[in-house]
Image (cartoon, rainbow, N blue to C red; front, side):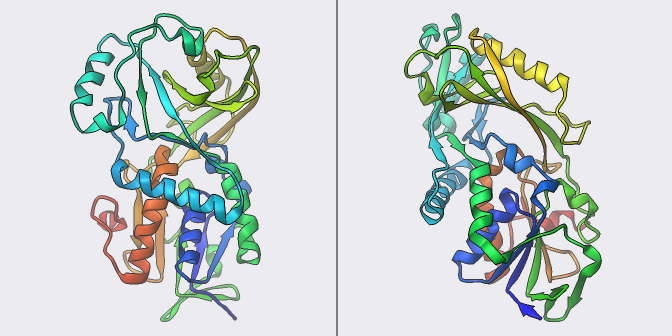
Length: 351
């Protein structure tokens, strides 16, 4: 029987980030996952944004989670000898006439540290598209999730077991949990929307949402300097270099599959044309299902009956920014018995 401290099920943002933090804390880990089962984390544009554009408010726990995330990904770049972190301001183009008014109001409130003054000039210098005023969101950017996850799998080496979890092979014992020939203190499930198939945690309610993203190439260069910004108006344009951009994402709560659709393509194409008239071609069209919770809060904690089992889920569209901070909170819960806050603790599902 091989012994380890923690078995992590899942190799998306939640599982891999938790594995890194447990390993950094000195614990032995095993990660069990078949990465091909879910594409959500690997196809994500990986954007982190401290502002929610719907009402121009701060993202949940942005003041805590954002600096922690940037420090974490910077350390990962050094550890894995990769480059994954882009720090870029977001050029937010206004559509409705009341948006600039609300923007200015929020600048005087707590969101102001992330917002710039409104540029009332046409933004032709950025997008070749006239008659858009805009504001800038600072301290934003993106993480190359695919590179981060693939490099991490390679880094974990023999501690990464590439297989689909077989729940029937899980045995709970007084000292912890046994899976096949591995014995551990705890098993932590980081399965995203597949938690609905988990016989131990199927009492946790998610509200998964399908997202489609594109990789496109424009037929001509944007004006010089525009590649320094993320662009946003109903969708994101993330510059990748050489006229290529990552575009996303759609939100579909009904068709919860990872198949691309003509509807999603048409929606994203229309959004791109609202930002710039430059012609483009689609290079890649991807889709994934985000594991959003019903209350839009992460889910961390132990099982309501079995202390040997824990969960890390519900990161949703803000996963890149939230994963490092909440992985740390879960590590403190597992190793120091710190009780998760009721807003994001798994105990809120115990009833």
